[in-house]
Image 1 (cartoon, rainbow, N blue to C red):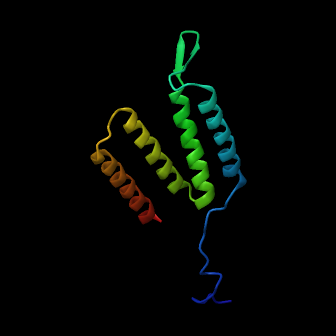
Image 2: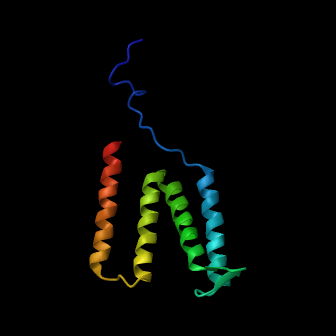
Image 3: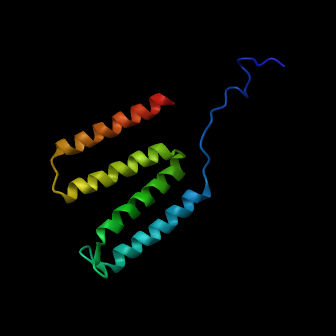
Length: 123
């Protein structure tokens, strides 16, 4: 059979699936974040032998995982989820280092938009 241009099978858009893995990751990371915030003060240091770990170094990856999995589940796009979660974490790192001038926020937004255009142009 000939494929015709108006055939509904040819006009379908390929979209990502909404998997339960992202929902499970969202719930687990949310519970871990709530437990981390509730149980430990912000200046807590976990000491194991000669090695100490600031609790902030655990909080930021957990927050990234939570945002990434939540946005990937809601919007069905891992690329957009990675960009938005990275933007949020980078903004928080800027704030922690007292880079609070609006110019830094604009630079970060421009970087995010340029990466978005780069990713959407390749599709």
